[in-house]
Length: 116
Image 1: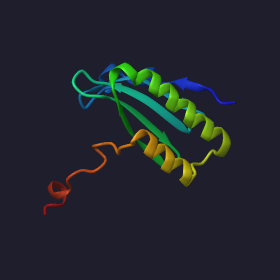
Image 2: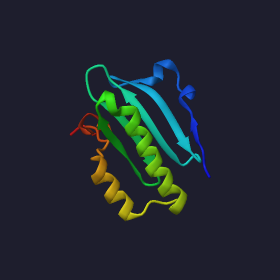
Image 3: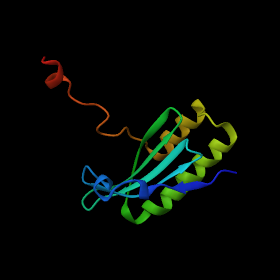
Image 4: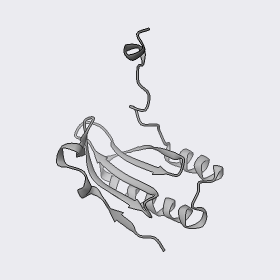
């Protein structure tokens, strides 16, 4: 049985402030899975996860953020315990169930770098 490890303290206070959000908690499972919660004063909270080849953000209301994060951790841990690597079935069902989004800063404008 694997145990979640809180790694929030590994981030400086400055680093915990990110794009109008604040890293409340970040936990890892077997150094392979991460689930973090970012709060926001103006927007929805963000639950970030990364597991194998999949990662994303799940937007949630502040009132349900901590409970939903625990539910997500439980679901991912169960899948990890069984398969270690993600299955297409899990990716599809998890993504649909939680309306997983890609991080907004994943893509950037290359025109300023490439010059065209």
